[in-house]
Image 1 (cartoon, protein in one colour):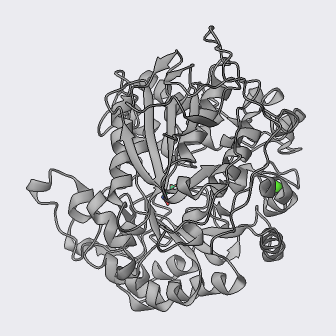
Image 2: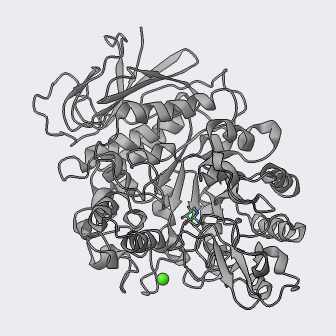
Length: 599
Ligand code: NOJ
Ligand code: CA
């Protein structure tokens, strides 16, 4: 499904390309846009799919818009803002979990897969919201948490009643009389222990995340059948896809063994992805996915070789996965996201994104993201959130995301350039990850000051603060007390203010989304990294049907120079985050330029 090419009409922005700006302060009052392209239908693109061409906008419903004053965003809030979402030009939304949940891990602990979380509203609210999205031509992707349920789910409540309960086998157990279970790691347990003792049945149950998130037993065909039938329930309602939470963990290495010494405690390599993982996903595809025109995105943290097992078409599994290599750059190895004092190198950043592009150049399809609900705000982490550079570096990062050969997953609020709130004290955090790590470091007598400083950059709650709609109380998010503090900069940084400013971060995002859709070269065109050793500028070309675009991204708060070896004498500036952009390798601080090379 590929939309017809159109002539672009942005003529109101005139480039003053020759007026070289001497000073290094960003002059971003106008965005250079020259999109007068006549994009002819491509001959070279095989295997087009709507989800390859889509820009996906991720919404964290809890923080989007509250309509009943309880301080928690809700589905009615999303419905209220449908026109705003439509105005972004995006094609699909991914909503973080909206199913019933006690919220030990903010919805990633589901207590009823066929109902809506009571704080978020009702099934009727869901139906209204879904219809509203579809009327606007926007697809809706939900979050499927299939590796674990909540301990408050009916299945678990039954399973722990007795060892012969019909639901017992929906989970993984280790009987007390068999001794201590072999070590398994939990991400959210204060002691890091993946087994929790259950006194009623004198046994331990497995939980890779918190002890309120028991892992489901996919070995059990009845459990798999329940999952497939639940997925059909949502697809029959019209849902357009699933993002699948930690889907690589669903198969376990039964019977549980001690980690052999050669794995050096590396659970990911030893038991992370169990032997039946791909059998289950293929079965899920046969039973459910193949029967609908839907998209699937696996959170699979795979190596580049493993990634193909999930997404190569002939394997009939998923459409896309996402990796963590990019977002993990810059932390000390095996640490609780402690910032590496040496920082991160742009050449490493380039290598990671180039490696993943190459990995899918022939087969499969790539994804790209810098922000999501598990990440801090992209401008703080990868750009520069000082007042001088926040806007311009946000735009530069948006340019990166929307010019990669990959489906971009764009996180709500990043289109405003929202930045980290940087809490000073642990009491402000609501996220189980930050709270548990704090407890662990405290118990070990570790460096809590260093941890809290790192959390200002790295904590997930930075990306979860309420959306900044306007300058009224609580940023217009809620009339009550927001569940998580609002970033105090909302009086200046908010959507309403940016609507009025033609050159805002918000309007730059809109222009770039439109520009990407009108230029399939940015979606499908071949990617080539240039000037790899340059630690200031990231440069790459995109090529399709004899056309060539060059993207130059200055990642530094200073004037920098690219050395691409290309002749830019006849190059044309198509887009930039500076008004006076020239077809030059000399870039202003955080400048982004998209050029067309014509020789
Ligand atoms: C990955 C999700 O993205 C994260 O938010 C969650 O805490 C874990 N999976 C557990 O479900
Ligand atoms: Ca609410």
